[in-house]
Length: 102
Image (cartoon, rainbow, N blue to C red; front, side, top):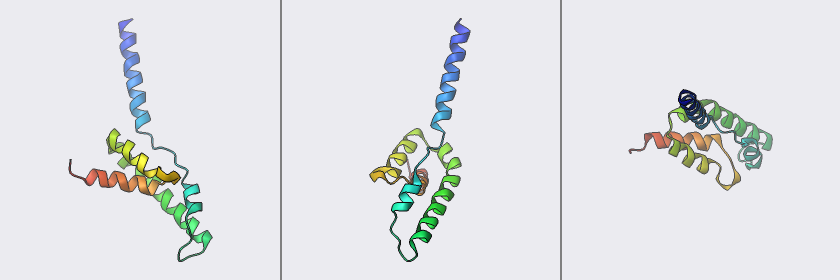
């Protein structure tokens, strides 16, 4: 019975770790649709924004995995503030956090 309990604890700890390492899903499309057009058409602005957000999302995995739980939490809060979620903001925050001296 004790062996099963220990195995259960390891399984729970592993799933918690895996959950914490999962990149959050952000509604960046709404952010892009709310972005004002500057220097290009509205459609081009939205398309460029979506391209930037998807590029940041694709580049996020290794940075997210190496980030501390605290950095992930702080940066996620920053990247979703004011109702404008952004992978670009999340990636930039995590990169800045990794470069900052402890």
